[in-house]
Length: 380
Ligand code: NAD
Ligand code: TYD
Image (cartoon, rainbow, N blue to C red; front, side):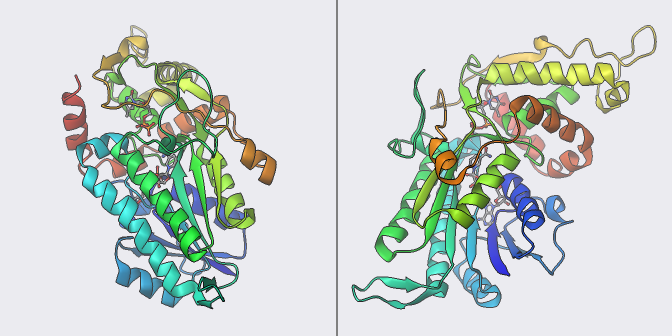
């Protein structure tokens, strides 16, 4: 049995990751450490926590004492660090929280792992490490900055972040690498493109658009909607992290992405069309709409679910134009490839959102409304 500390697993990708590894490996135990910020929801992983193979601890990755206690109690072999403040728009409003969690939180975990895992020193003075341990940092393609019309991010692309979020993730990557270079700590890093799928908090583009359509609200598209993101279904990201953690060499960095670049406006139009068509084929889904206007035959109307809902709003400050991953290295070294095409993944994601309204209601019951009003009233 290997014991993993997985931080931030009450959030979107971390939750999908623990579900993935618990199902895939019989010989892994997971301890989730999560502060349950607005983005973390215990309900997402409630069915996974059984206090035999999966444990939950509420706490802050910046808390050194807690980290030491957890390492002493559970004797982790692997740390997978998902915990982060993850939304670019929020980082523009409050950069400091991003620096605290994303940089100092990562460094705190690295130090706790160092205290727990170092066994001695070699003849040159470098620490020696317990066998089989690994610190994995979940990073993002946003550390590379923005692309022009051509080219892709490779692992050799210079780091050039623009937003406070991506700058904080870049700093964390540098610190992880520094611990490898300075202490020979066994680390790895994955830098993935934009994820979509079940359990994504509806402040990110795709779930926000779905939620707004159901509520009959306008669909805010920043700038001209021509910015490009490279979308990956979340389970394919989880598979990549699992492969890197279990198979990649210490000190390695891998980009993760599936050559699926789309303009934001295309994503929004596709989401509108898909929801409209699903509701046309399955009229029962129309009960999810807030607007319950009926036509002459008494059917709930859906003719208003069209592109007229789109509203172009003020652009994000420093908005990166294009992200695009070159995934050759992870394909060649580890045989990773994305299993879910975008056409399949987007329909699965929309259906999941439609069928899990209780979850959406739950995660947006706190300050979400205030957030939405503040963020979008400034833009319109
Ligand atoms: P998320 O916002 O959905 O979840 C973040 C989780 O971290 C939440 O459960 C939250 O409660 C927890 N958390 C926040 N601060 C914490 C703290 N101080 N201590 C403990 N827990 C804390 O984020 P996500 O989209 O699941 O992203 C997870 C990771 O993947 C992040 O590191 C992010 O940078 C990276 N990433 C995300 C994407 C994407 O498209 N969402 C793409 C590439 C990389
Ligand atoms: P987002 O989901 O916030 O991810 P990231 O900023 O990490 O790429 O945004 C994806 C793209 O969609 C990004 O170019 C900004 C844009 N966007 C909108 O046009 N409207 C919105 O309401 C949101 C949240 C994002």
